[in-house]
Length: 169
Image 1: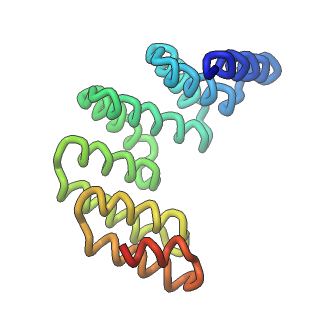
Image 2 (image 1 turned 120 degrees about the vertical axis):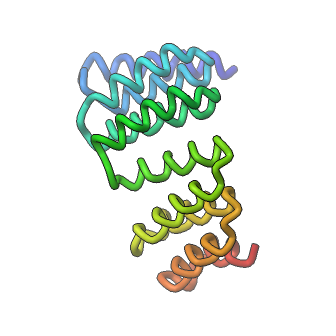
């Protein structure tokens, strides 16, 4: 049963926090356990705590918190959290991506497409980022932008089967 495995995971993450009270990995793990259990106050508490660490993983936690509020359709809170995140980490591509996801959730396809295009163009030669940007661009129905991202990825690694398969779609 999943409940038993979640209990074990919770215990392991708590033990990790006992050894290292600043372990963002443990905090993110406990947030994920809370999310799976639909214990959203716990999810929020751990993501907030991890987001305050001032590390790159802390930015990831803050982005996951915005994503949580998008998932539960609390768009006002997502926008508030995103605004604070943008003030501290303007230009971080993770922040650009979550901003695009919020715009997409709000039905603002053009704004989302513009953000995803910015994400793709800023990704340089990062294949994974280009493929991710392409997927987000497709969700925003920016098919031209999605093809550009995939073509750039294919130019960088012409033998990548995943990129070529996505380009054919």
